[in-house]
Image (cartoon, rainbow, N blue to C red; front, side, top):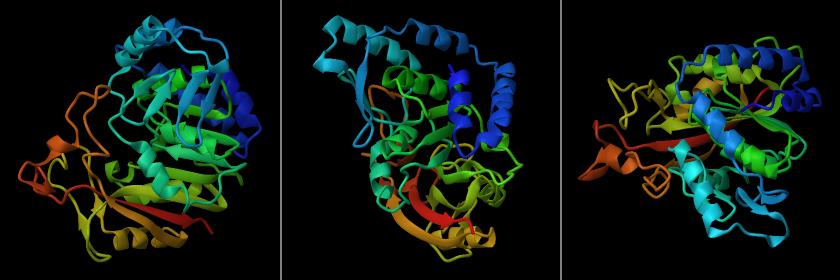
Length: 327
């Protein structure tokens, strides 16, 4: 599912070429430890996908892939491809439009992108990392903004398969997803790093969020930009929620700081020019059950008679996006 040779070629021409061996070795270690029983099935599914020839695509206003010369697939071809794609259920990040197939994902990830894209530094010609990228939806949008090299990392094997499908039909290089976590990232910088690091929807899953902020800073070049999106609560700079058990039915939620507390954390970690660009309450229009994600979603995680509270009685999901610079 990973185009290792193409990845090595692309990273060799990037600002993080020094880390090429580290990434390749880390991926090999991950493959050696794979235990998921469906991995072979997903590999076979990818190999069975039909070839449709040259394609065109739009990554700037959406992620849409079409056949070249205004060609279209027949109804039977669309149905057969749809059935294959749905074998990778659930589709959580998107949406995608693939040959007139609308993959209506659980999250309207395009809304999140629209909220942040006018605030971030221009990505044209930049080397970008997306930590916890899911199936890589935002990686494609970053490429659509003109990034030179985009690397997404996420340990989920199913997300890797979903990304590989888009990569097969978009037919361009310089955008890769590796099945790695933040713990697999290189620790020796050697004046190596990314121009921008995105980390969206990950920090609250970490037992040591401050340690993660240091790790993210180490992955940036001097003057590089961190784009951080995470769950927050209201309150002053000393306010942090530590759920006793689950939060919105998620097991692995550790720390939900206030925006001011998060700014304090980033400042203490050595970031500068820290600013909050958006605070948004997650709506059931942005995260919901669809034909492509039929499990329970946000509607099921909130109190039936009070949508301002989770089913556990905590404040309903509120997300903030912050931008910070590495000195």
